[in-house]
Length: 117
Image (cartoon, rainbow, N blue to C red):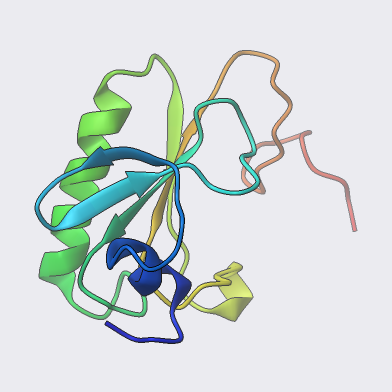
């Protein structure tokens, strides 16, 4: 655990969170600012900075995310590595983002859904 890490504090029970599901080594919580209804974060108990640090931890976290995603008809599973990729918390976490037709959530690889800059 890293004391300065908000996700480590949540995993340790030292910070509040709306827990959706728990496994022995991974937790799923609702984010403070969900982008769609049902949006959750899947977070390993082990502090790793990002998806590239410990592949086994990343794989286990993805397996848990896949369990949640399996029950949804349409979903994005997203993680980021580094500030340039929009990572804001340096603790691996996967976003499970349920989608519906016409929800207009912009993603950079979806033609016509993001503004030209």
